[in-house]
Length: 571
Length: 62
Image (cartoon, rainbow over all chains, first blue to last red; front, side, top):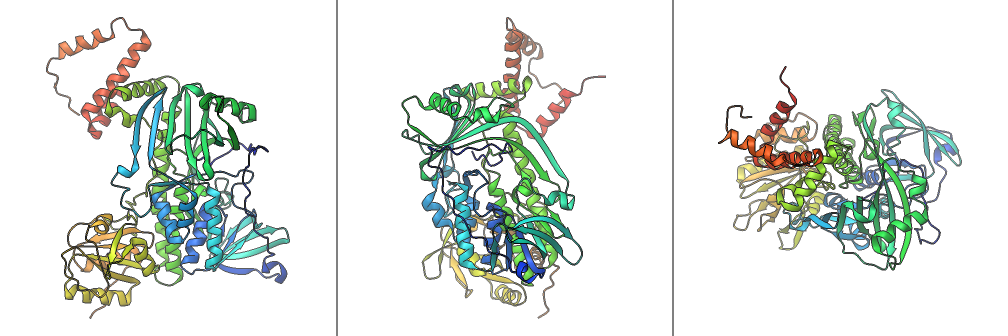
């Protein structure tokens, strides 16, 4: 899995490995330095990693102006060319909306099968394509690709879209906020300057300085589990599957991960003894010995990158502090098991981007921004809980925890039920929102990017509809529509940022001007409704609410989704 | 969680349990118990009942 959380500052790129040539972006002296003015920006994003760039790209897509400050002049972690590798269907659907999915699909590796071994035996396996939760989206369950590729694609896309000023080699050194604005002090190779902002996005990562600047409290847990990644290319070609060993005979009965990514690079991630010395375990001869034990002496191995890491789990208690929104690793840090790190950051960005855009365009009330914390903190807590459980299975405490793992592994070899106890990571999902002030109780669920037919019979997807709605809410009306209901919707769409579409089944009569066909019921299923119903979709492809008739409950839900109390105008 | 008797033959089960541990080392005994807990938990299934059983097991008599 992704070794995204190297706390140990030791990374090596062996000279004989081809490594990666990362793109470099030019430093342009900011206009504030020449003018001496303190500029005022609606949005400043700090940090140009996966999360910050996703945020910037999403805002650019909505046509919202922002400045992004990154302390580096390249993508990828400092000194490390590889971080996260596993991208979920939800992230891929988001990247499709942002316009970089095709490049990711061309470079990355699709996979859906995972197998878990204990000793020499396979104890369980899964195929995500066989699971109904995954098989209808236009995007596959997972694509593995080096994180810096996605970051570079995002940079290219942002440059295409405009609206966002990407400032490389701009490091924020101080921050303060008041009722009027936030003020950031920035250091650059050309000198220092100050910039004011209405909203600040902290996407600086797990060592965020903003936590201290705003006095944020953090709930944390640190363990003694140590791992060492070897990203390699070799003559041997294992299957394109996720293989995990709980007790690998070739790694002193400790865990091993094996996963493919772009450029035929395999990530082999070895669990080390507790508190192992990172210098020693990442020494080239020691790494080579490990690889030889796993793949045999005759296997030609080219080491691309080695990264020892420890992980911790941390979750900020409030994801919004005044004008500052925390997202990605700034908000929470988890172990890499289950791909719940980077993917969560992508979803954080997608969640806040449409809300900020709607508020800036005057379509939603500023109160909507509070739902960012409600929704994404629930997701963060969920991901922390799930990854902590995995970590506990993979590194059980001596004594009774190890005893129960032995019992579970033994039973898993004998009985089907016990395979579910074997926990090598529960793959990340689009987290549901159950306590959001912007969603009705039946809402808060993600909608997959499924297909349907446009009125002319050509194929469309949910993302096409969202793009057509262009940052507005989207009401899908399933089944036949009454003239009265349609008239009411027309009135609503005139006063609220809303677009309405009738979704007709195979035999339904079409009444609305804007309509599509859903002969297989995929769109309706993806929206979690049945029969005659409506679903209110948000630009992040989450259902805000569902209902049956076009009445006051819809108007109420619409208001809620916009952070405002909405009254239907009298006719 | 049921607290009234549900076992069909309490004495026989108790004897069976003790017999299963006969001749086992302490470690093997502990493993047997752990396996048995997981097997029985799957028979129960119900999350609330299991939670109450775990809590009840932790609560020793005064």
